Image (cartoon, rainbow, N blue to C red; front, side, top):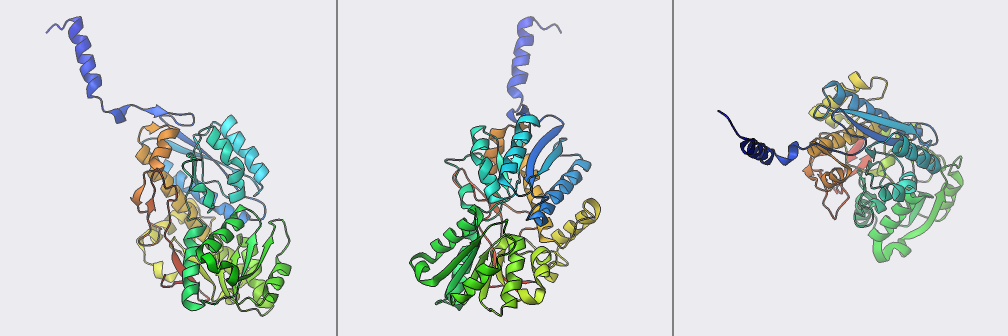
Length: 397
């Protein structure tokens, strides 16, 4: 049957009208039919190099996804550069990733001061600074920084649990605080003081800070003990957390000791400090710990251990930081899958800001990812833990 030119045009128009909107592929630089290119900085050297394993675990997980066919046929390329835990180097490496490598986003970069150094730069260029590995309070600010979102709980999540626990077990505590002298440590002090409210000035009897370049914080710990404090909060990176635990034990001080959750790794912190010296520590968690016997038969941990054996055999499967990298990568894979064929930077942030109860396998039961256009804090739930000399034991929150 002959169809005239008008009929052909009408048929074409009808076909176009019937094509679903999701079938229209949209890309920004760094994305294509075959690839999604990500950039990040990690401290593979420097004072917190133990945390560099997070980036290696993420890369291994993406290798797994690529081997299985990628995300909707697209392979993930992760360009993970060493910044030695130095903010100026973070800036240098991030500019290289954006301006020379043409990445779609900056994903999972580690460090509060380090992400602060690139915060305005990335937002001015409208490039996602997504699922960054830092617990700073400033990242939950979609009004002023709509291109930035952290993934881990911020300082209010665990300090609120510490305040509640103190109310139960030591309501008249004399509190000392050791903190890292940067945004990471200062935000912890601020969040804890906010949690105490009007009682803060009465209960906090001493504070001391350290620089990440200091050889130790021994003199600060001795000074805090001399204040008469019976409770200590340590808001420190892993290296200084381990040294603090050892020093407290060596000088015979026995405070009720709270430790920032980001430094609660049994493998990287408590073992170097000495498990016997760490007994009684209180912290918080949002992930299952593969070294904890209670998860030995858990399906999610068994899957994680199988992944480590196959894709990251040189990594330590009991290292908590590796579970973090594993979960971080799963969170991004989930988000990229929800982006479908609209891999524009705007849609990436739209999807990141519309997570509704997303459950990832290694999150503790009851903890999910939840965001909105006005809430850029994906994880706000944690569980209080006490170390018994072998593993972290859950406390009633």
